[in-house]
Length: 532
Ligand code: ATP
Ligand code: MN
Image 1 (cartoon, helix red, strand yellow):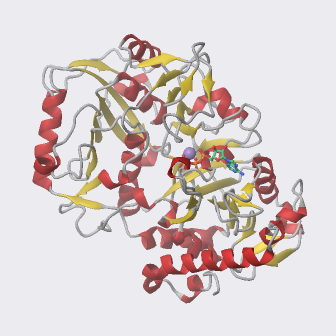
Image 2 (tube, rainbow, N blue to C red):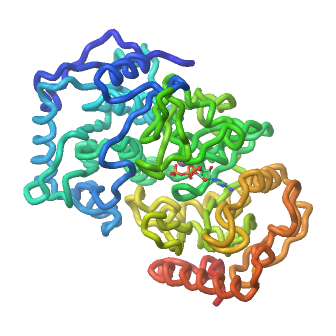
């Protein structure tokens, strides 16, 4: 299944307006690894992985993500500060500047596709300025067989020029970096940033428009895996809540760690062909599957290594958001192809840094819709700011920055599917217990894993539940391999009054955030709101 993607054909980029480029088409991972090192753009870690620095940007830049507003998008996209409109003429001008910049250069081109279900396949051509960005595309997108390459017809094109800086006044961008989607020309134009995540999330955003609008399929910011009984679980959650970590479960086959579609036939397919894991504080003991996936072929981003190439996973000198990308076959237990059937359990992951939400609770359909539209997690302030107050962060559908349509369009599709399949929905707090950030501690990974396993194996069907007085969530009072005391968050706080105050404040944040969606929500959904 590991194909080298070594191509015998050559291609020209003239049709894109890129002139006299030296085109490296479909190079193998080994070649890209070697070229990156030869160019001084990366080094080899002692694990064999390639280590690179992505430069000025070590994360996505949501404020610099635009969508061209034209006949295709005008009436469908939910415009605002998440989906920021970009003018058609301005796009054409900027595009021309970017392809002029890329002309005469040595470039790296890869044909790949998204969507593991052949009925939904989206062919993608990625044109990169840097070899390691092209290796990222190899790792993250699906890899066509060589026989498919001879007749490959790219539908979408990613033009990725990290070294090109826009002139905001002239180009209509906010600053020098940008990621712009053009649905009419089917181009994702990325410049001024080397952060590789922009490439994958650009295509994700495109699919989040294409699939619901044209293919009656719900796109989801979630991971997914499948058990021995053939039942599929999906894990929604914002960044850092545990999608990648918790979906890598040696007892279940991994479907994917970040982006999936739920079809009208109730199958779940991965959009991608690889994973993009956070590596901060990574240990082999806690996360063996991810740790062992870091080998030749993988790309480490923005990590610090010693002179022997040993990575210091605790080092956040460059960024907290240290990452590794690897093709999915670096994980041992995977589902091939990346398609799951029989969705049985949905987990909403949240990292509640206020220590209020229970570590696991079962949701009613109304609560499920309410929490999906809310998309809650907490952001923990950076240490250097000197502030240790966490802030609530609400992002609709657990992925608002990637959702071109109004959140309720996705929520309605999900509600319908939940009813059709009778799937269980769980809210899992992978965040704080025993008090808020600074006082309590993060929930132990082994306990979260045990709670998820219990839910998946049906073990929570035989235990008693109690209701959270404010959030109305149904909390198990016992769970195999988890101490009873931690299941009700209030019990873990030293000062019960402080818990009640904190819980009230969080409930108020939920209600305040939801105000803008109330006019779209029926009584069932509003019944899922916290009391107050
Ligand atoms: P992204 O969308 O950015 O890829 P993600 O949802 O995939 O984010 P992960 O990469 O899984 O998030 O990150 C979760 C992080 O939290 C990991 O570094 C993991 O080690 C850590 N962690 C600590 N405690 C827990 C817990 N109880 N459950 C899950 N993750 C935990
Ligand atoms: Mn992830």
